[in-house]
Length: 108
Image 1 (cartoon, rainbow, N blue to C red):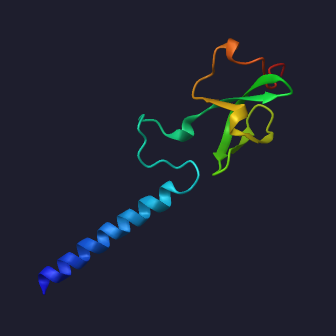
Image 2 (cartoon, rainbow, N blue to C red; image 1 turned 120 degrees about the vertical axis):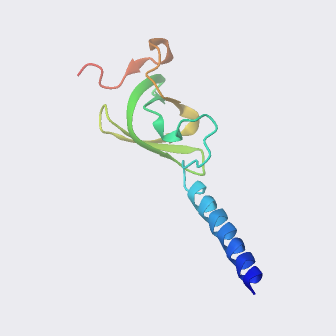
């Protein structure tokens, strides 16, 4: 009887862990096992193609979706931007000046 209880408890534990991992990784940009050692949420800058220019924005928050889109709340102008992921490049650190045409709100 004890062996059966242990097997059932072990099975329930495995199922609970598997469901928890599936739930956590199924939500947007949550990555439980980060292969590079940094959280995917540490991106601080993004360049977005706007009217033929590559504009650098400082990121306050961001999220991606299952489609080819991404949304950003920017620190520089407090704007909410929804764009195609094909028009945006993420950076953890501020990129070199050659990587963008202009900086958002740089004149402030």
